[in-house]
Amino acid sequence: MSKSVAIVGISGYLGKPVLEALLEPAFRDNFKLPIRAVSRKAAGTSSEDVEYYEASDIASYEKALKGVDVVIDLRGTAALESNDLAIAAKNAGAKVYIPSEFGLDYSQAGPLKPVFQKKADIVNFAEAQGLKVIQFKVGYFIDSTLQPNWDLLAFADLSHDTADYVGDGSQNLSFNSTKNIGQSVAATISLPYEMIPDVVKIAGDNVTPAKFVELYEKHTGKKVTVNSTTKEQIIQQAQDALSGKLDNGVPAFFYALRGASVAGDGANFKNNNDNELINPGEKYFKWEKIEDYIRKTY
Ligand SMILES: NC(=O)c1ccc[n+]([C@@H]2O[C@H](COP(=O)([O-])OP(=O)(O)OC[C@H]3O[C@@H](n4cnc5c(N)ncnc54)[C@H](OP(=O)(O)O)[C@@H]3O)[C@@H](O)[C@H]2O)c1
Image (tube, rainbow, N blue to C red; front, side, top):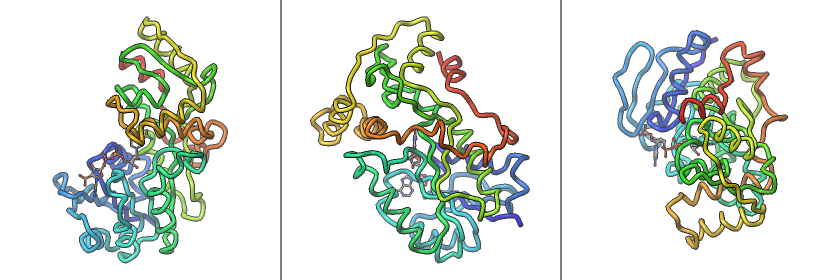
């Protein structure tokens, strides 16, 4: 039976890729069209495929979600202050709630775990409401990691051709393009609910910080100066950025993410992922590679 789906927070990084994926020929017959696209301010013109809604509080969310089976929350962290969407999803009769996770397994973030508390609270709250909660753990977005500041997540500062990573830079990090994240969401919710794990981990590509530098040097012809650092220093920098002691224009949250990834192994899904469950043998889509992004970008 086809499922009715709503996307909330359509204007962010993941809105377009998720919407486009739901409408791909491989998936669209699995969903009742139109897909509902919910925004604080209606973000487009409705068609047979997409119906745009304006909503921003429990009552308006509930109205927009009435009769929907699956609610996909793609809102930014500012929206995680409240449980309004999970409450509205439950009241509207939804079965599945996909929280705005799309990052690390922060249960492994050690001293930086409190940074992710709001995400964890929403998961717990939605589960307590009786919703089936599906968390997507995706590591880092390939497409943003090549941007200034975001490259910190790969332990690099490409604007200055430097990198600082722990030891020999051999800790694996998982990356996914936003397109593949959208396709993974579409493929996952196409499955019968009972086949879907509570946590879906995807790893379209896997790169160590040292390999990231090597690929960058290969495609740009530039030389990166690598400073070897320690896990403790990376975590301390994150704590300094969060407390305001370190303020160099890079968002503190990026330092926190980087610190969290070395505190444990929460950005590494290389040998522990659901790629084959949702996209067996790349039946539905090709996993995009960071090297192709580097080649295209530089
Ligand atoms: N792993 C990674 O590398 C990575 C990178 C980036 C983001 N992420 C994750 O991806 C998710 C989306 O992030 P993003 O950067 O796209 O977020 P964002 O740009 O801050 O916000 C996304 C959208 O959410 C809606 N929104 C924002 N604040 C809201 C509020 N207070 N109330 C209601 N709606 C609000 C807006 O959509 P409308 O204007 O349509 O309402 C906005 O365009 C987050 O969970 C984030 O942690 C992960």
